Length: 203
Image (cartoon, rainbow, N blue to C red):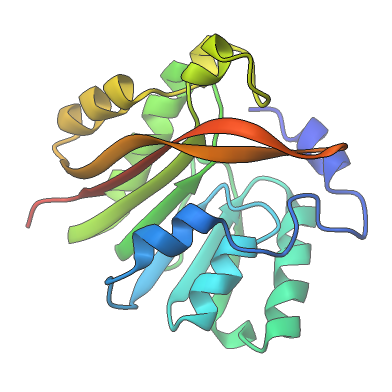
């Protein structure tokens, strides 16, 4: 969880992962009533700002301050500055300004499995009872299919590993399945198996 490489990656005027919301975030939030939300390791804020546009009060937590600065600029551009907060902190150790919240989004947080378990535990702790945990990742099956994206199996979740982790955290899994997605590369979008998650914290 060294932010150095990520800070360097975000040192460009362009938005590395674009300003467009992830398609699965749009799908998974359908039917949810806007409230308070955390975008954990939310980077440049494309998903956080979109949630704010939909009426959510959102906190983007990321360890790269320059990514958060770009998130703030995007929020200003979209007219939702009042609805977007930023907190510079690691997913492994953060104090939220909004918690407990109605929704925690964890999108493309690819770290070693023992760290991932800590991040997910922190995400659940930040949820209100009855709150929703939402996740999107490149799946373990990417390696089997020679797809693009991270290639270290220890950083890639699967339906099975996520289901087991969620049950261990006391969550009720609503959706956990693989989908056809893509990963952004310098040559443009490339196919990627995507695993999506929607789970709730019991009341």
